[in-house]
Length: 204
Length: 70
Image (cartoon, rainbow over all chains, first blue to last red; front, top):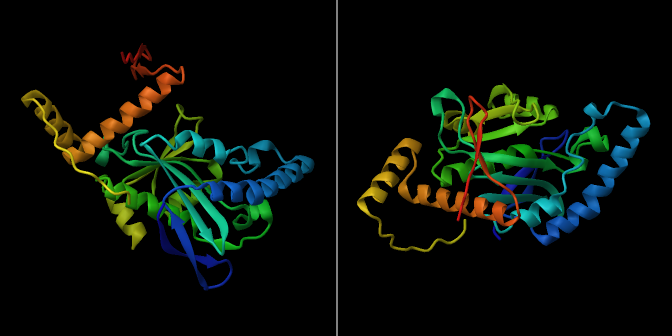
């Protein structure tokens, strides 16, 4: 497993902090997920249930079981996993699929792309769960990793994903991806796609 | 990035033509086409070994045909 140096920003400051991007999810990362993320997610879920907030407005990745996803995907060439750590703590997880679907935008229709199956940031980076945000930049660094994989595979930076509705703004505004609208064949989630030019712009 | 190993691949004219056509159509080099094919083949094989079925669906009619791998 290899790691590369990246930077996260301490929330509310201009301080960039050294972090590590890992090109797989290790057993240690899964232990950290289980021991640090899951209890916070469970507490947040209990709090939301007690508050009576409609389930549709809860964070939509409560049910993502990273241990099962990782275990199932480990022997499959098409699925690639990534983790971000900072200060010894797990900050983000992502899984890419290199054969899930081909591009839908007319300018690149039918071309291969890197598809983001799952992308999550730690609960303490999410005000909707922890009420605070320790670091920003996990999602952006993961998207950069997806673009790099896409380029290395000869896909020219093309990336696609279906976004949970709470992440629509991030993919549209922060990543500059094209929103192709609701996908009736995929739980009605919005489908976003990045072209080579959008990838260049995002990475600059 | 994972270390890569080199192998020689012998193809018939028809196979090479198909590979070149796919590479052109997909805007990929031939090595990537082969790698994508391997990834897909492994994924389909894995699904079938799990007892799942793989279908090809007609986008217009929604008719489904099961993909058989013998």
